[in-house]
Length: 105
Image 1 (cartoon, rainbow, N blue to C red):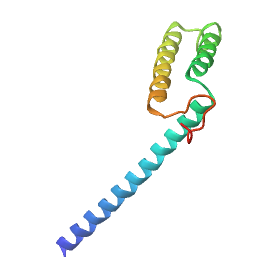
Image 2 (image 1 turned 135 degrees about the vertical axis):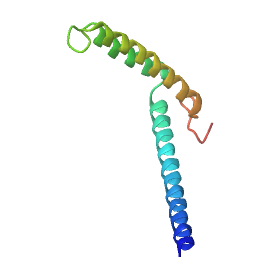
Image 3 (image 1 turned 120 degrees about the vertical axis):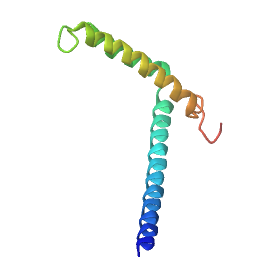
């Protein structure tokens, strides 16, 4: 009886693990598709320009939370992290050059 219970429990855990892996694969694919869609519509340089404009707006305001030096430093750090993330995404996601479709590339 105890052995049957352990086998049943082991089987349930294996099923949950497989379902979780399927879910993670689907989520990963969705994230890649989202990144691909963004990079097909907008270049990394344009995204960087938008990000920099938002950063400048935050740095030049006296409104909280950016009225504190620590928050401004965090903002600049995160700007650099997001910029690196965009560059990495552009390397990972296959995007056709402007004016070309992915099928033609």
